[in-house]
Image (cartoon, rainbow, N blue to C red; front, side, top):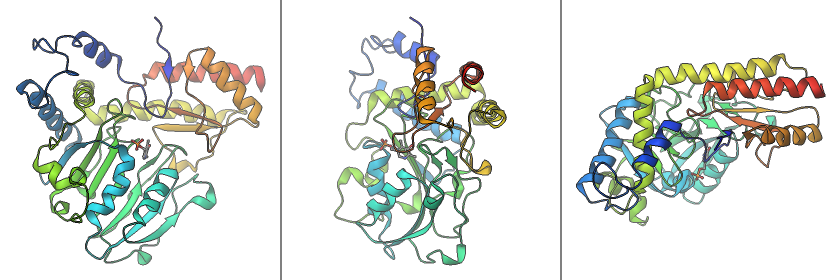
Amino acid sequence: MARVYNFSAGPSMLPESVLNRAAAEALDYNGSGQSVMEMSHRSKVYEEIIFGAQRLFREVLDIPENYKVLFMQGGASLQFAGIPLNLLTGSGKADYVVTGQFANKAYQEAQKYGEIKLAATSKPQNFSEIPALDPSAFTADADYFYICHNNTIYGTKWPVLPNTGSVPLVADVSSSFLSEPMDVSKFGVLFGGAQKNIAPAGLTVLIVRDDLLGRARKDIPTVMDWKTVADNDSMYNTPPCWSIYICKLVLEWIRQLGGLAALQERNAYKAKLLYDFIDASALFRNPVRHDCRSMMNVTFVTPSDDLNAAFVKEAAAAGFVNLKGHRSVGGMRASIYNAMPVEGVEALVAFMKEFEKKNG
Ligand SMILES: *Cc1c(COP(=O)(O)O)cnc(C)c1O
């Protein structure tokens, strides 16, 4: 059976070698006579998987000693509440930058729990850029400062991180996780759903600096208290076992490729192929301010909705699927996460060239 090039924003492509390995181990994982889907999370054989995944996560992302890696459930969306519930217990204040729908959802959710300020937004620019910040307006005694690092729907990414001084920076990295090296020490908390770049849906990874544990409100669900999760090695209750196993295989694949620096080079090359073609095209256009362009989600439009629809339809028939933009913005979006091979982007560009010739 021929596999398609899948440009879905998430859940999204996984490396073929990882899928093959999981298939080969589906009935008998490592001589255990069981599938990872079936085994107890308290077994020795599973402990090697979850601890191995945590160890590899630390190694691949070069996570400092004073941070914990937590494997949780509920998606990035549950952490929109988890963040204020765990952190908003000092001054009860936090600053948010709203750069798109997911940042806005986090901002709305946090308002249930404290005094939340909108530090900046790019809504007037239809989220086509990351807004300028005025650090003198930041809340000096805020419990944290919140950003969404890569805006999946609009195809934007923070070109430089805000300098928040001693206020912990909290970032949703759902769609940029493990796509490039990151200086974890610049953040208090990093978190994201795994289904974009890391594993199948069901796993949320949260990296938290030690001093931010143990601050949670007393009335929150036990499984949402990061300290409980950390103290129990992410196994206070049953973790998303299968997703964590695939996460481990993906991390092994990243290491084999040469780590995040090598992956960043490959990802930047893929993004440049697509942006360069779009910039030179008379038919396609990318609406994002150049210095804010995402390396993972590339949005583009033609001059008409009819032509956009025709493009999405013809592309799908040619084996390029899920190119339709988010329902709220229209147009097209090619999500080119880690697992999208260079050939997939080259083939898409060739298809776009042909489409332009016929319709330009
Ligand atoms: C997909 C996505 C989310 C939502 O993640 P869930 O795991 O579905 O809750 C949040 N933030 C960003 C940036 C995303 O891309």
